[in-house]
Image (tube, rainbow, N blue to C red):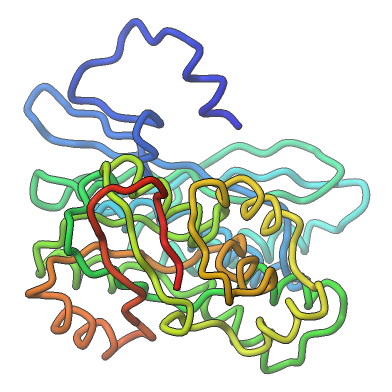
Length: 322
């Protein structure tokens, strides 16, 4: 939404080596006169779980994810908080901030302040400032033909959190989703930097199909993925069959489907699962084929990484799903 408006505005002070929303990059990049690259991202949203501490954890992990997707090193963060002070006690606010602090402590960065406003509904997130680790950053616009696509977390957090709100999810399903959403992408980011990967993005609100579409469009390639190679959270398929999924997932499918060729055997529910709007999702890594097997194996030591397909020459559609 914001990027559509920004594209119509003229930025008169931008330099050629600075980047923002133009190529769907995960962070803005500012290059200092000495060549050092500063990266920054901001994200915040309303609660998707009932527990305020867990909400703070999830929001903070999600905010940090863009930095890790670019292979960056986070330096510090600022809190962004909206809170209904007339309706909820300050203890709830404290727990939200405590959850965020726990994640930034894990990421080994300080929170140096922030901004809060009074609002009817709680909202929380972080502004995160980082830097490139070795003078270069990984973009989502540099995927190469024959690259193998690796995903580092299962899909389905949007579906499961919707089931949680409706009181349909079991305790084990709730715990699995929270564990996935509070897991930092820092380990995956550090590992991929050792494998000379070509491109990366994180899977968040636009779902797998949306973020892969952006990678393909900006890289001027297409992708071929297989549904049965993709891992989903426990219960995601059953809930989708019962039409339990967020409205954002259906909007994702409606918007991106014109750029996608689906196998005729795939059901509408399976398509929605691929478009499910994620919170603090995994990294989608585009890796040269000669390094992909080893990268997947090393990632799997610490997380549930899996191969979903490959990059192919640009065709009429951006994504082909078998």
